[in-house]
Amino acid sequence: MTDILLLIGSIICLLVGLIGAVLPLPGPPLSLIGLFMLHYSKYAQFDRSTLIFFVILTIAMSIFDYYAPIWGTKKFGGTKYGSWGSIIGLLLGLFFTPIGMFLGAFFGAFIGEIIGKTEPKIAFKAAIGSFIGLITGIVGKVILCLAMIVLSGLAIGEYFMMMV
Image 1 (cartoon, rainbow, N blue to C red):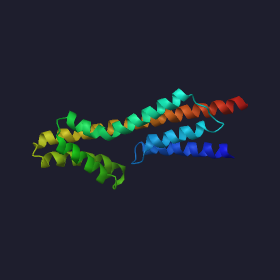
Image 2 (image 1 turned 120 degrees about the vertical axis):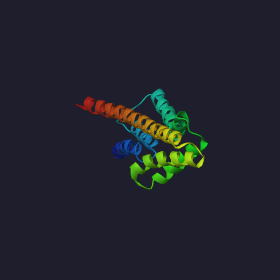
Image 3 (image 1 turned 180 degrees about the vertical axis):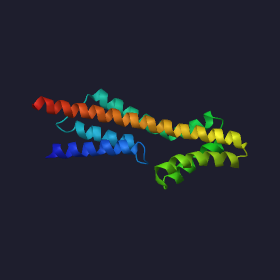
Image 4 (image 1 turned 90 degrees about the vertical axis):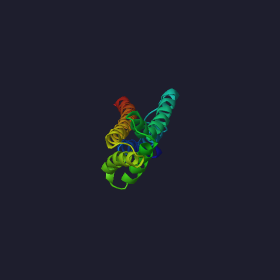
C-alpha cells in the first residue's frame, strides 16, 4: 500500500513539477521530490550519483531561473533600474496568469529603465533581454523536469516489464 501511495505521489509531483516549470510554482524541486518518492518505493532504485546529479541540477536551475531575467536585462544594455523593474514586474505579473509573468518582466524592465532616465530605444532593448532571460529560465526548467519524468518513466516501465 505504501509503495502505491509513493508511486501515485511521485507521478503527481513529477507532473505538477512540469506544470510548475512554466507557472509560478517550484517546478524542478517538485519533480525532484517525485523522483525521490519513486526511489523510496519498490518501483525504482536510482544510483546515488544520479540522485545527487539531479539535486545539484535542481539547485543550479533554481538559482539560474532567478537571475536569468536580470542577466538578460544587463546583457542587452540595461541597468540596475531595469533589473529591479524586471523583478518587480515579474512578481506583480504572477497575479495575472502566466502571461502576466512575461508581460510583467518585460514592462517592468522597460519602466525601470525609463525611471532610470534611459533612452526609450535602449530601455526597449533591455526589456527584450529580460524577456529572453525569463524564457531561457523556463526552457531550462522544462528540460530538467522532462529529464526527471523520462528517467522515472523508464524506471517504472522497467519494473513492470520485469513482472511480465
